Length: 406
Image (cartoon, rainbow, N blue to C red; front, side, top):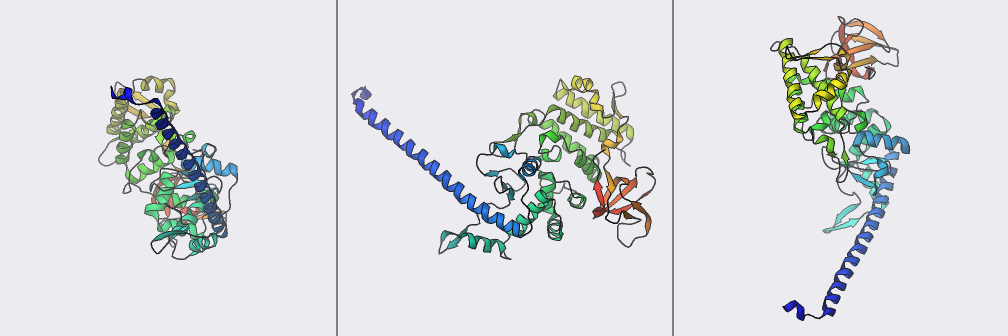
């Protein structure tokens, strides 16, 4: 054979060349990584100075870690390179654990084109660029960070998100799970005219320890009715065995949904269906439809029925009647109600007959009065009093705080 005629030293020389090439590549990769870290650290320093000049307060390590887990589903202690990319609505976001803020643009801003070449900017030029009134990056950068990490809803932040409801506001509420400001949260809905990629964001929190999104499920039902139940149940059924294995949130990180979270989200939707009534649908029809949904999931997961019975249907107030082929909601109706409490610096709020500031005042409500949401109209919530549900009226969202004790 021809191979037998090739001297051994040729093989050795060829092997040496391969090893040498691999070593050079590894050294170059390491060098490129060092350069990338250096350049990114400089950019972080410049952006940090810029954000602080706009009123951003760098959060504590503990706070930043918790918020990164809640908003992005990523534990900062597991990050090896300071810039951690994630999958978001626009597939661009990166946050820095050293700078403790979110970068909201795709490429480095520290480059400028000069005579057809990319030329690096100095730190001073970088700051000037960020402060330029024509820079489209800066308002986005400021608004996101002040809202997410400072809970700051000053006039600039509020106006930015209210004027960008269809993209930025829906991203922070739906994809980053932001729920703290009642006004911004409520006006981000409805979302069904939005891009529905990554449907799981409508059902589960990014922080898997928080479980499923009870409040959002209720709001989606209030906004879109029975239609939303079928959409979300289909997503659950299609991904019943996928979600527990992990949902990708970046190139190398996943969020794992527990079986208990899946079960509870399913039962919550079943409960909404079992209580649904409209001009077209009777309560009996809804109860039977809920039963059929549940049976379909029993067929998908042959352990589900026994698991639900063992957990007493997670105390969610459901009774399954195989004889009548119904799911009946017996109690715990607060589960499918969104409650708000009145909050005002004046210690009272105006309870109005119509959703505008000139409408007649029905009553003046003191702080900490429990209200149940009926629906939303612009920046006004139509509510009923928990203790007197026959009394209904409108309250401006700026004077309400979500009550998660229910």
